Image 1 (cartoon, rainbow, N blue to C red):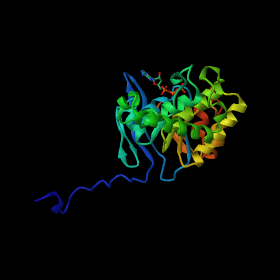
Image 2: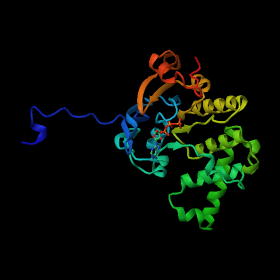
Image 3: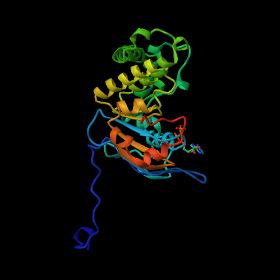
Image 4: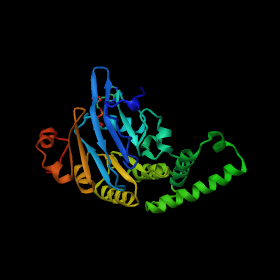
Length: 278
Ligand SMILES: Nc1ncnc2c1ncn2[C@@H]1O[C@H](COP(=O)(O)OP(=O)(O)OP(=O)(O)O)[C@@H](O)[C@H]1O
C-alpha cells in the first residue's frame, strides 16, 4: 500500500510560506565547548520595509547569528529560509544574489578609490554571473561599467551621498565610511539588509543622519535587520527587537515591551558599557 493510501499516515509538514521574508529556526552554533548560539529562532514576517533589531550584551552571540544568516558561518544545527527557500549553508555570494545582503565592513574599503567607484564595484560584483567578463576588456564589459557607474550615482543620490561621490575614501570621515558601507550593500539591490553595528563610533549628529538613512532605506521597501549597541538609536528606529543573552533568545517585542521586560533589564544590569536607555 502506498503512503498516500495509509489511513493513519503521519501528519504532513506544510510547505514553507514563500511570503515570509526571512526565517531562522532553531539556529545553534558551537565553537568547541562554547555554544555561541543556542536554538535561536526569528521571523521577519511578511510585511516588507520593517526595521528589526537584535540586541544583547557583549558576547551574547549577535555577530555569530548574523554570520549564519548571511552564509559567513555554517550553523551547527537549524535552518535559514529566505522567502521560503532554504538558504542554510549557501555561500555569502549566493545568499546575497537571492536578496539577503550584509553591509560591507570598513575593511572592504580601498583608500584610493572614490565613493562612486566603491559603489560601482559593489554593484558589478553583485551582478557578475561571470567573473571573467568583469575583467575582460570587451565592449559589453565597458558598457556594463558605464551602467554600473550610473546605477552607483543613483544609489549615492538616494542616500544623499552624491556630494562625496568623487572623494577618495581615505579623505572621508569615519561617519561617511560607515554610510559608504551601507551604500555598497544597497548596490546589491537587497530585499533584506543586515546592518552590523551601523552606528558604532559615530557622533550624535552622524548617528541621527545614519538613523534617518536607515529609515529611508526601510521606507523604500527593504527589510532591515540590525545589530547595534546604541540603545537610544535601537529604541528609536526598531519596529521589533529580539534580545540574545549567552547565546539564547530571552525576549522579543516592541521597543516598549523590551524596555520594560524584567529579564532584559536583568541581563543589562551592571553592564557599564551598555545602556538599555531606561
Ligand atoms: N570563530 C570563533 N571561534 C571561537 N569562538 C567564537 C568565534 N566567534 C565567536 N566566538 C565566541 O562566541 C561568543 C559570541 O560571540 P559574538 O561575536 O557572536 O557575540 P556578540 O554578541 O556579537 O558580541 P559583541 O557585541 O561583543 O560584538 C563569544 O563568546 C565569542 O568569543
